[in-house]
Image (cartoon, rainbow, N blue to C red; front, side):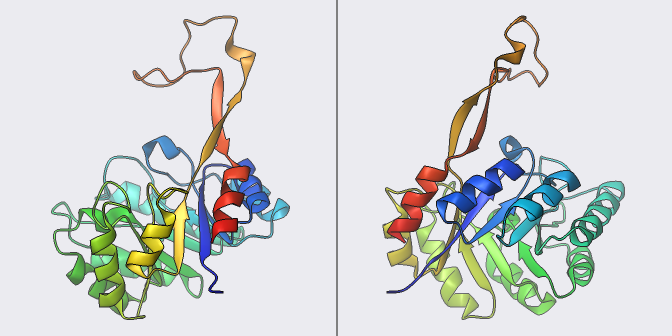
Length: 246
């Protein structure tokens, strides 16, 4: 029976441990998943490495809201990348674009060099590219190992046609990792239709933290006012269901 690789999107060291409990093969460690994932702290990485045995890809994304960074933000990204690698990251996940959505080749080349022999993953920045074929060719030429994509659609299910085309176009020169919106209801269709050999997903459960209950008028976040008495963590049981299906 063919084995499919399961990567879980994590926002903390606790998430990594839950993903491992559920049978994940690999994780992508971030912070701030609400904004699509930002660079994790060194402490989260150190803890996750010490307490799990999974390969850990770490996000390098200095802020939310696009992928065309200022010089200061890019310098920060490179410094983060170096520190993440120095503290055990098994690979970097990144995406650098120009203002028009094309690949920033110079910045991508530089971070590929920083990553050295560690895994180099270009994330879903490719999903806003005007010409993903050109970008995929460029990433292959630059030595990127893998691309995370929803097929330029809101989720991988709706992007199956493009994901299938990407896999065929890549022809084994770069890995195509479908992600976004994959769940027990659609994972079989996505795998069968696209011909992918690995998937990326996250599934969370709510946890309670009543420490803020004494004053419900206090908010520590932005104007969206998320609830302050709960937080999310990876649902290891659900991950196990996906793993068993795969």
